[in-house]
Image 1 (cartoon, helix red, strand yellow):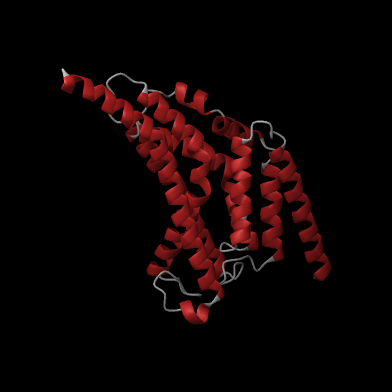
Image 2 (spheres, helix red, strand yellow):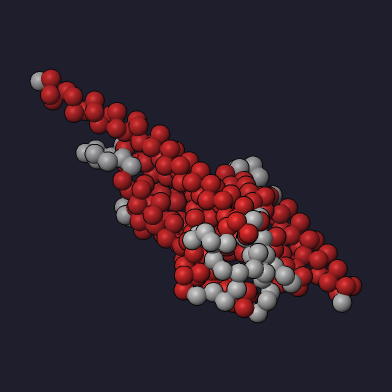
Length: 266
């Protein structure tokens, strides 16, 4: 009799521990990502010391190894910037699975969700890596991983600002802001497929904001933090529905001012 009573108690303990496990995992990944980014940013500023680091790509004439290092950098950076904004979805998915009768692993589908989500941003990271390589080769991005062209920076700012007002942006953002609605319509899907779907909406919402990393520097920690906080605020602040329009207006004004200064300087 005692053994039959222990099993439900154990399951309840596992279920109650799952939200803490989700929180801890996301916080750990984010912390590791930021430690890596701080180290990389320091290395970029102190090339005389870090030139021999195996984590650092060459300044020019990239080979396969350099492309792989930059790809890894982008993946880690996207994980650190984007995963915190998915916490409401992952916690709700965990609670749904914990309430299912007979489910012995309340966090398994959530773990697969996170993997699917990161897969989408890994695809974005591959595109960003190839774009950075191409821009480096034509001297529009410097070896310090920032735009060396006023016109490139202005164009990115203007396009990203205009996209903040677009119907596609708001359609994708709506899915990101409504975790319960997203999960209820897809409750039978696997965790990995849910992660891919949610990641696709998230990428549709934020990919141009991530492209703005080229404006002030891919390794500019303050700029990374500002963009990460903007993404979190857009998704998680229910009363801040004006935020995309405000940020879009700021980006357009900034881009126009930069474009004007470029014309004046030339």
